[in-house]
Amino acid sequence: MIRLLGMLIVGLSVADAFKILVYNPKFSHSHSNFMGRIADILAEAGHNVTTIVNVIDHDGADGTTLSEIIRIPPSAETAKMYGDMTKSKANMFEMNNFNPIGAYFMGKFYGDVFAAQCRALLDEPGLVQKLKAKFFSHSAEQKIKAAGGTCVLVAKGTITCVVIAIGGTGAKEPGKLSEDWLKILSKRAKTVLDGFRFYGQVRLPPSGNGESLPDVTFIWKYELDDDFTRNQASKSENLELTKWMPQADLLAHPNLSLFVTHGGIGSVQETALRGVTAIFIPIFGDQPRNAGIMEHNKFGKVLDKTEVTNSAKFLSVIREVLQDER
Image (cartoon, rainbow, N blue to C red; front, side):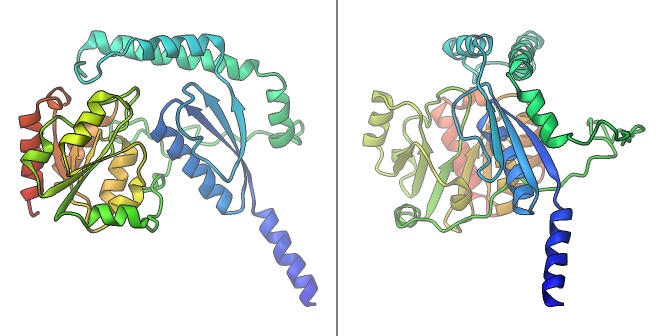
């Protein structure tokens, strides 16, 4: 009887599992992590999850560790378009978010590069047959039931009535920090974390942080290992440069005083979940809106991206936010 009951429970758990396909175009760190997190959550729940990682930009992780990955490499057309864009070294800090000409060309670039990689996906040998065998092996005789045929738009966004918003999905639970990170966090009364990651290589912060705010430790992410970076590190005793940081773990630590971010949706979620004060420097896309919402809700202050290289202005905003006890 007990054996029969056990078999029944196992059978029920198998019956509750779904075959789920996640499409994750790999073009930005935050997007890959968000979609990968969704795939892993579904896999942890016992579902059979497959992720198509359609590669546009090779940099960064796939975002998922628990799902089966089907990786589609960039086509020659995709690689050339994306390579030409990165080689152009466009200064996104100087571009006007509201310039219709710039917005048009930015939209055209992403539209063209995504279309090119979609063609690569459809041309991948055997892919359609593999997906059909795995997900639609019994679909020939099945009737298709249309879901959400009549939808009502919510507010001004393109969210339909069949979409359920789940807050904090992309945020990971914080883990234990290493002794090295704990030592850095305990050096001074306050610590500022720069979580700035952007398409391309960025050099921050402006010079003068060490001399102006000696009681603050700056943890700054860098991507260019050049003379500028090394000189900054040698000038400021309170500047900790790193190519990688456990962002989720650092944001959850009580000694973290301020977070500097571009205002991507992933960083905004983590900031809100951990209750951290932040300076938002939106670059483009949804970031200006995200940053404005966070400032409105007293999570910090928005700094115009064109003022990032203005040391006096940047440091003034840092002081203002650090001194605000709200």
